[in-house]
Length: 353
Image 1 (cartoon, one colour):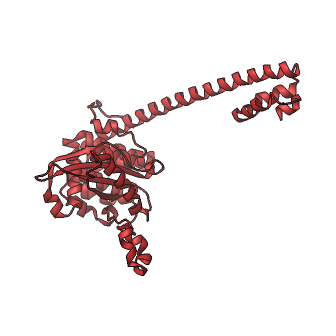
Image 2 (cartoon, rainbow, N blue to C red):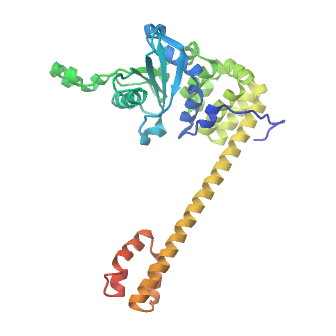
Image 3 (cartoon, rainbow, N blue to C red):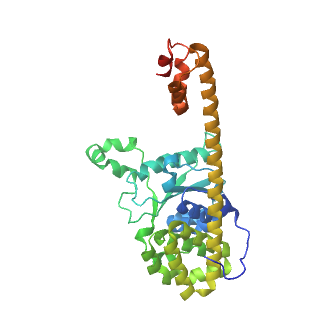
């Protein structure tokens, strides 16, 4: 794609720069909802009304830390907030997990118990007082959430048979925002910032281009306003789409913008070029790093091969061709094994296995 005009440059928000995440979903979610101004509306939407009134929203702040299992980070993102209760110095924790898996996890409530406990320990200033942390799950799955939202439902048969077990089994009920269960119109009616609304809409539909384009007329007016008033947030959404789709689909979106929102086309093209350039630079940097690492490993292997060859020659005399070839073809593991045998071997063939 080629820009049709001067490329506008602007300083990106710190949140975007910090969102070096594992997936496009994670990147967009953290770039937008790390900002308490955007997160507040989503949290308000999910909390019971009594809690909404009880919190001092001016004190809402992002807390450090991530509590998702390392192996699950490609499919989940998390943020921890806290806010003071009105008339109190105590803070209430608000832990938000966004699930990006195509299929919802039936054991989500158990996972959330562990994450919430970790968040509580992180927020606790001393061991005498542990803060309450509310568990919030935003599901970005392909279909509606099919599982129970409380932990005791996982043990329903046992609890029905032996009610006495209930006090001894940890219970937790998640506050669930099932994006697939809400229509685009319902999401747009929420009292959220413009960028938060559009982020939820795009997370809901952007993976499927037909679904995305079907919803296009519903949120296009808000996207136009975002382009005019919050250019950095607009670029975040465009880059999210770029990361999800091949070039052919990106060109289809450009054609749609050209036909229905031509004022956005130049920004779209500039964003595409910047996204490609950044990806190319990151790829080249990764290639150089991998090349340097490979070079170091090969150099180390050659050095070890030379040392082992000298030791073998000291013990068994000049090496025949087959022995030299065996050394040259040996990988790091084989060289390690040879190092352990060389001092106890009674012949060259014993040493080389």
